[in-house]
Length: 123
Image 1: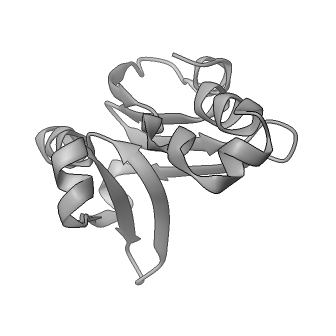
Image 2: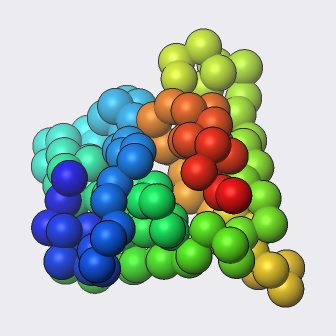
């Protein structure tokens, strides 16, 4: 578990599932031009966590974006995967909050397991 999540956990909150960016990041043109440094930093510093109370997602290092939402405020977690992405085990997760707000996160490893864990703990 990463530093961001460790620093934002509240009393009686614990991590129930964690995933990261998929290795497919290393197969893109951006990776080649940056000598694979940018995808390595992105993969290492990004956190995708479900706790017993909320979803916490932090992406980036120098410029980071953080997303936190209570499980009770999430209407659904949707998955978008191409045929190749399904075979390789990555995809896009779309989190729809109450009020219709949508957040998309691309190249997530094991998106179906992320959704399954969300469904199991969103009661």
